[in-house]
Length: 248
Image (cartoon, rainbow, N blue to C red; front, side):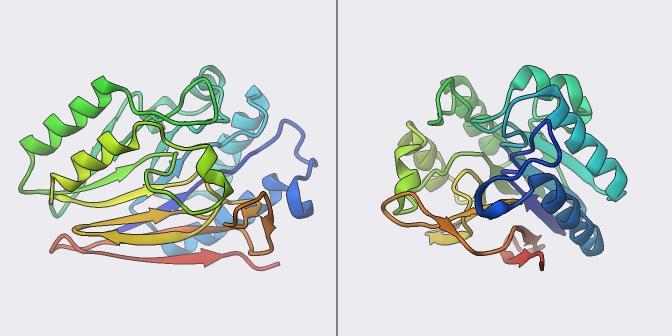
């Protein structure tokens, strides 16, 4: 089963506006979604920071680009630290949102969990209620396989983005460590593609659909191209994954 993760689109109300490395996030997302369509995924997971300015127009642009791309997939969206939840909910199909479907039940005993780590600041946190609900659900389906999706990074990246951390990640990671049915955790936020196997679980960070951050101690931008992550959920509970980037 093929899943595609996109993250950190940072769209602006003005579609001609550019950001770091002179990248126009509207145009890069449009080109990237055309590449996503070619892969024909069953699910597209959008792990936050759709907007860069929190405007209604930025979310309308996202919805329009999705519609124009004609991707025949389930779409699932969670918020990031830059997102305006009121405008996001008002301008994106509610069927896509974590508010409607916090779990996606797929074939081959796979479940995808949509986690909201947004706080009033740039740091992240998963509420105690959501953390307990996650544990209860996984215990109920402990013989199945689980993929968890969040915006903030639950393990250190070793770079400057660690100051914008997930503040109760220790509690979250304890749930992961205690449940071998959790096979993968995906996230965005750091604008960098990373993978780390921690015992039974593969942690996977996604590149941004616009500018990429250099994973070093002080702020810097990478010259890598915008990209997305392809995730294959296998019948035996294993995961294979790869990064795809758009050309100039």
